[in-house]
Image (cartoon, rainbow, N blue to C red):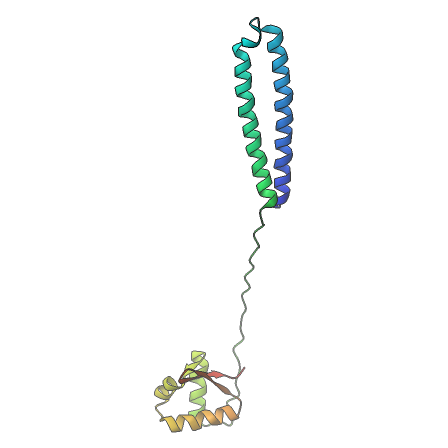
Amino acid sequence: MRNRNVGYLIIGISLVIFGIIFFFNQGLLKIVSETCDHGPTCTMYSTISMQTWLSVSIAFLVLIIGLFLVFVKEEKEIIFKTIKLKKKVINLEGLDSRERNAVKIVQESGGIFQADLMDKLGVGKVGLTRLLDKLEAKQIIERKRRGMNNFIVLKS
């Protein structure tokens, strides 16, 4: 059940409680007026008054709770989706051993900085730049600029 519907239900219940209090109070006053010999100074009148205010305040509290549920915003349900990514199959035909090794390192790491790839392959800056230029021309990898560094990822 939605909060708003529950709120309307509670408001209805509080109105029924107010009605019961009213009719019960009227019945008690009638009984006390017929049975009490002291008239308006009878202590039962003060007891009825105290019980009436207590029950009205409880019914009012129930009404406030119902109004709160009617006017409060409902929480939105958050749905999480898990996405399974397929591992990209790369055609390594036509690549020399150094190019294949570079592609495997990038694929295993999911992306790597150019300086780290240079260390793993054991080649110099110029050699790695030429190697990456070839792989980029064959549309296998992509260089993304990150500050003063390049981040190497497989082309999607």
